[in-house]
Image (cartoon, rainbow, N blue to C red):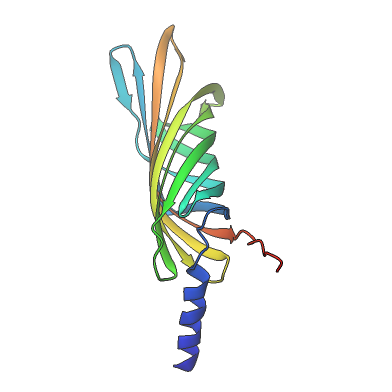
Length: 210
């Protein structure tokens, strides 16, 4: 029981003052097995939705607290997905690789515990590469576009500066490319549960000499 009380006090101390103005947060998250992407293609009056697919992504991020509990930062996301469909007795494979850079703002709901909920939102730009393979032939499509995302999560502090990051996010990526002489708009919608580790670097307080 004594050891549990000591552990609780350590966790309580760890959560205090880590989100104050001037502190820095560095984190990296990846999917937790629940990450789902839906793609919509639109050319003129024709709209087609591709089947939902499972994906993998990793997102390193950096933030600086410009005010207590409020951080501005940037997320860099690397995203990979593979979709296999059967067509005329053969597999039609589409592999997608996407990179985005997104300025973000995050608000932490600071409280008297080691669990600190937060909300994050961001808007940015990215590049998308698609490779379609069928019967030994392949085609490559590259296009750029705008991206945005929202995320809700919680930081669980295990030391003074390290926390586990658990969250649920939703985002979109919009791009355009040529399709048979027409402009095709492609929308990627992604919903995913993420887990990661965050490092909080607390600012050093200046001491005044007497």
